[in-house]
Structure formats: structure tokens, C-alpha cells
Image (cartoon, rainbow, N blue to C red; front, top):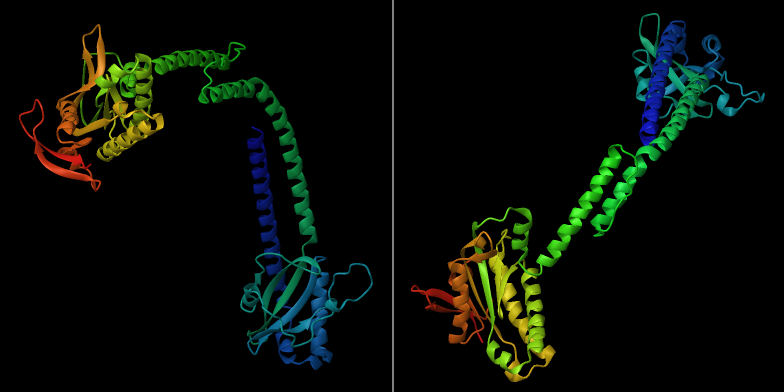
Length: 473
């Protein structure tokens, strides 16, 4: 409110100030053109035409015109100079100039106050001055010189035959003009000061009654955004802001409960399944998606189970699964389920990324590499070494709630899932750790150099063979 009041008051005052300035300036320009036009008729163009050299300043013609120019400067106390000019050899030169009527009161005659000699060139004449040789004109804006701010008006001087033989120029001192503007400025500043004082009073009232509760809500939201769901705000009064505060506290409480559910359940099911549980009514059925399935299994897990105590086995599996899940999610996939020592990951659901085939392959290669790193990190013996193998296939699947109305599970099923699992099983028969279906491989722009095509392969439980790429040893 303070800023708005300041801006509006300042803008309004500035608008009227500049409007007044423009109006006053236009009035001065009109006055100068009128005066120059009227006084130009009193200057003898025939006398002016014969004054061509500096020595002509002693002639009666020169003295007559100079006397007339001095009389012109006496008609208005703001007129400083009156002078005549002509165009000679393509340059603007002075003809007859009057002494300055401006007296600072020091009693001294300055050199700049002396009349310009006949034929003295006027350098860089403005366009408005040149226009004065043809028709009455005035400067577009004031200029500052040793006399302060001045503005000039011009009008052509004619001889007895009606020819334009020069111009009359009048310089006007704008000291009083600035004084009038100064009084307008002072009134504007006073008005702005009163407005600002009232704005401060209003700002203090608004701060107490509105802004403080709003800032309290803002502080609460900032705490919630940072994850602090313990935040609660004090409710004061019974107005709209108090209503908002009560509903804020209610909202945060529900967020806290939902976050607790999400944190707990998120460890037990895929994120897609959790989103389905939290956002929809649970019903049997699902939707068809085109996805890429990654099926990863640990080889010789049974032998490891026989040789390791359960606690050590679970700890080892947890380390392994933690590393694998991070790789899957880092490559924009989700882990659908764990089946014993097997991991099923999905790419392209719940929303495709546009690079799901490549992401699935990148994640699979990284999972194989990470498994080997874990063996070295944990220092496992040869008979206890972890060795995973992976099958990758793309196709349509059904993603949804499977089971009964009383007990259901969100999962992904379909031929693509079975094929990926069969491809993982094929890796043992053809001595590789990664088998990639031709369906998926066709969608990957550049396969790694160590991937080779091994032709159509029969998969367990399938009558139709499928083209397979494998990771070379």
C-alpha cells in the first residue's frame, strides 16, 4: 500500500508538473514568435541590407537598427538580446547586435555582453534559427549558457520590395519561468509528503490487522515446503484469516498422516502402485501399457542359502537389492516386485520418458557391473560370489489391481513379463549374463559393441522363437 500510494502520488504529481511545464513552454514559444514577428516589421530591411562589413558599425543605418534592438529588449524584462542575422556565403553571420540587457548588478561590462561585430559567423545554427529566415519560429527547448536558461524566437526581416534579407532574433531569459515551475514542484512535494504520511498510517494499520496473519501463514507454508509437518499456527479471532489458519492446520495434519502412510507403504510397493492407492478408489482391473521389462535373477542362490546363516544371507541380499534398486530408479525405471532373489523392473510405466528402451539396457549393464563390484567390496569367496543375469523384452502389459475385492495387489502382468523372465532363464543355456529381445533391440539406436545377435531362440513355454541379442563374454 505504501508503494502504491507513493507511485500513484508521484506519478500524478509528475504528470501535472510536466503538463504545466509543457503548457508554459508552449506559451513562451508563442509569445516569442509573436514578438519576433511584430518587431521584425520595425526593422528596416533596406538599412540592414547595406550593412556588410565591420566598419559599417559607425554608420547611421547601424545605429538606427541597434537603437531599435535596444528598445525591443526594454519592452520585456525577460528579453536579454535582440539581434539581426543574414546568410552570407552559405554561413549564418551577425549583422546588428544589441548589448545585453541583463545586468547581474556588478557594474562591470563583460566581454560576452558586448555586441557581436558585423559579419561574425554564428557556428552550428539550429534548425529553428534557419527556419526563422523564412517564417516566424522559436527554439524547441530552452538552452543553458552563461546567462542561465534561455530560449529564442526568430522572424524574417523584409526590405521595401518584400524580400527576406535577414532575420530578427530575440533571446528570452527563463528565470521567472523556472520560479513558476519551482512553486509547482514545491506544491507537488508537499502533496507527496502528505500522501506518504497517510500511507504510513494506513500501512501500520494493515500490517497489524492483515499482513501479520498473512505472514504467519506464509511462514507456515514455508516450513511445510521444507518438510516440517509438525508446524501448527495459532488461531486468533473469528474472521476470514482465522478461518484460513484453522484450515491450514487441518491440511497439515492430513498431509502428515498421508506422508506417514506414503513413507511406510513406499517401502513395501512400487511408487506407481502407491500413487494408485493414494489417488483412486481401489477397484479390480487395470490399463494396457507398452513397457520394457527387465528381469534380473541371482544365480546359485540356493547354494548360497545352504552355506550362509539366515541373518548374513538377508544382509547380503539387502546390500545387493539396495544397489540394484538405486540403479533402476536412477535410469527412470521402477521396481515392480521382488520374488525371492529376483527383481522385476519396468520402464515406460506409469508414463513413458521417450528413452525407455535405452534406459532399460543402460540400467541392466550397470546392474551387472555393480554386482561384480559388490563381490570385490565384500570379499566373498568363490563359492559365495554373487552373479546376476538379466532378460529384457518390450511389449504390452496390463498394469492394475489383481486379486479379489477383499485382497488385491497392484502389479504388472502379460506376455512381455513372461518373455523377459524366459530370456533371463535362456542366459544360462547360451552362457551369457544378459539376453535382449530383438523387439527391444530394434528401438535402440546404437547397441554396445559387445552385444551380438545369436539368431532366433526357443524360449521355455513359448511355441514361437524370438530373435535374441546377448552380451558377449
